Each structure stands twice: as C-alpha cells, then as structure tokens.
Length: 71
Image 1 (cartoon, rainbow, N blue to C red):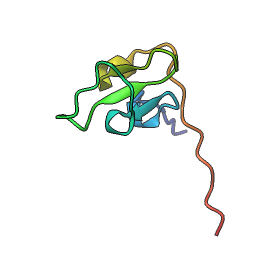
Image 2: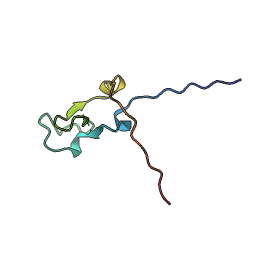
Image 3: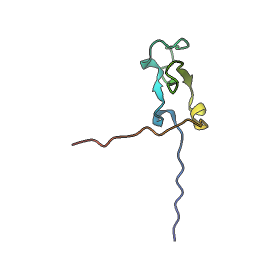
Image 4: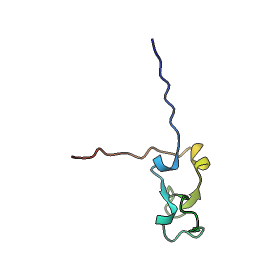
C-alpha cells in the first residue's frame, strides 16, 4: 500500500496574520525600498516586519482561510 506524507510549509503569504508591508501605513520601522517585506499584524497595536525565516518556526502561524469562488 502506498503512503503519502504531507508537510505544511509555513510561509508568510499563506498566514492569516501577515500582510505585504508596502500596503501598510503607520508602521514606524517601515522602509519602502524593498516591497517584498512582510508585516505580522497578529498584534494590531504593534505590527512588526517579518521574514520568511521568521514564519517558518512561528508558533502562532495559521493558514489563511480560502473561500471558493462563486461562479
């Protein structure tokens, strides 16, 4: 019998707590030259920049719920 292993990669673009930094305003450490920065908004009063490596081991990472397209 065949077996399949499934691994979940914790990437910032799949987490419900991350947003692209260039779309955020009012973030003190925001620096616009690199638009590929991610911001963790899990604590709305203190959003912070994160990297892909930060998300890989984050204990608060949650999969973003996707909703089916209604054709």
